[in-house]
Amino acid sequence: MTRFDRFVEGIDTPVLVVTASHGDVRAGCLVGFSSQVSIDPPRLLVCLSTLNNTYDVARQAELLGVHLLGSGQHDLAERFGAETGDTVDKFAGLPVRDDRDGVVLLDGVPRRLVGRVLDRIPLGDHVGFVLEPLDVEILDDAVPLGLRDAMDIEPGHPRSS
Image (tube, rainbow, N blue to C red; front, side, top):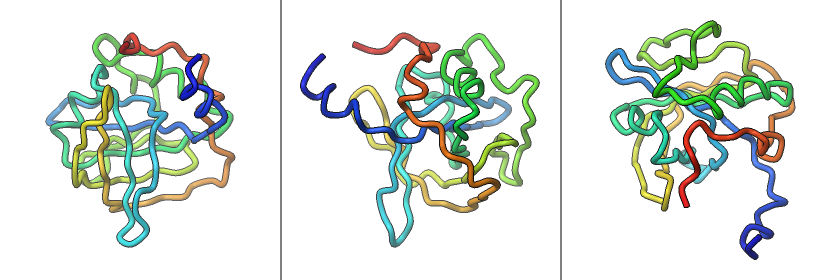
């Protein structure tokens, strides 16, 4: 374990599911790296692995859906983190809807946001998507599922070295 690994191991940020669509293709993935990056105007940064199928769809999308998972939604985190959209329809059997702009939204999550992509910033093996919040829904005050709670999920794509 490196010193950097030891530094970040105690930081427990919430995990998110980010959804994207372009044309008739829709995708979604588990995201462990995100942060509010501005107060006024409000901005959210979500980072997608460049190995991920969702990244390929998101880089063509104007809008993304961002879903905060509750602490009891490890199964949903596993579906979007351990499966790959290259071979599996991650949305099959889930309660989802397309909002008025075509963004795929998951039902049954505590919070969700639709954001306009303002910028895409290369950040090593991830690309940061800077989002302008267009619509924010608070559906439940559940405790978020943390990154440490999802560390047992093996990614659908191998981690880059």
